[in-house]
Image (cartoon, rainbow over all chains, first blue to last red; front, side, top):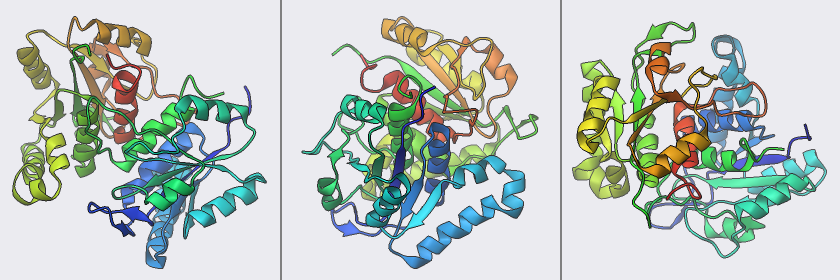
Length: 192
Length: 192
């Protein structure tokens, strides 16, 4: 089996949009930590960065991860602890990129995600062939609340097309979006 | 565009397994209601049955759905209410099958899901061609807790293969599993 692709993900809580399209910082959701860590572990994502500028929120994530990585949580649900071992709490996207760069020895190709089409769109086919080439690590960026702020999208190296349903409805939870996108990129049939 | 396929889903809270492989009834999780309804709406699933034998739990689901379908919830998050309009609360799988049969005028082809391989496995390719044929409605069954009890799996018309990751780890949340499976069955490329 070929060596697995090098892919990290980051979940941003700032800068993201609210319902009125204003840039905000969102609160951390407990199930975002768990569900996404489990998908990341399943498909071989190297690191799951959770980014928030708020110190109390970073401490909250740290406490949850520690609960499942040690003592009671570890003994009752070891698979949870294993998944949460991929979590890395950071302040912002820049810190995630810096950590990924240091770990992989190369700046990652940064891919934004959005519920609407973006001008820097890159197709799944193109992204899959980049991934398969293994020439560079990849960092896929997800936004909480109403999605990534435009600055994040436009400063990325590319954006994935939105997950299309049967009509215009496009209101997936970020947990569902991450699950689907990682399956498309790393799931059976695509994985090397 | 061809008429969409006829697919319903059901989330069972009984009979499911606990960690010790014993048959139990599980408690309803709020985010299972929301996340799965939103994925179902996105991909054109006709009805999202939530099955539990416990009357207080059925009432709990009803209250949540009513909150988002009326008054404050509807006005602040109309897309939530729209997704939750697909929810149908039932006592058990039999009631879901009966309702689907009555609505579609034909007994649905029932497909179980599991985190392990089952003897009645049916491939995605086979299921997709059945779906595309549109000759019959389909009902995909998901289990909460540690998955569907063996009786449910063996009485189904077939079982989907487990979602394979990079190794043996297989601990996705049911929210992630539903998201991935519906994308594989109804997402872009597969949808008629």
